[in-house]
Image (cartoon, rainbow, N blue to C red; front, side, top):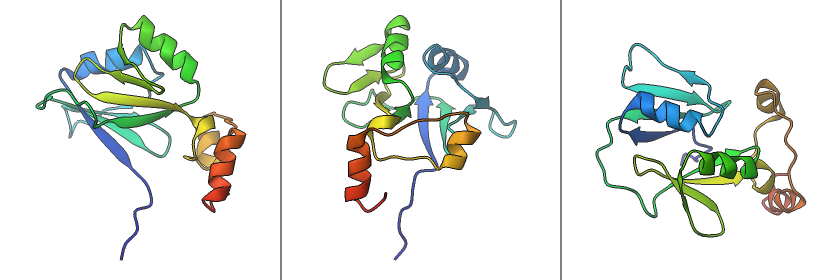
Length: 144
């Protein structure tokens, strides 16, 4: 039986593609690729993964369904979200709703099991440590 080994990408539906890239670009440093074959899509690179922004939101806002993004600096993300006027949801996590109703949860790379290979981190120009808690989770899972 095949095993799931990761996520290649996540697709988020947005209203206007340019507005979405502008809005997310006020919060995050974006490396965007667009292909002529997909004029209503933009691909935001995350090293060995990507987010596909797709123009044409057709569903109501999400509440429980969400996507989790990993960042190098969670506090800087909170500050950027506040400056952009984002709807930040209450709770113990840093969750927000974008202008198109996508529910996004932000976690710090240092605090979770998710890991990029040293080669991918180097290619992204990042040197990110893991907290002792995250390292213990990785050891307990047999992954470190």
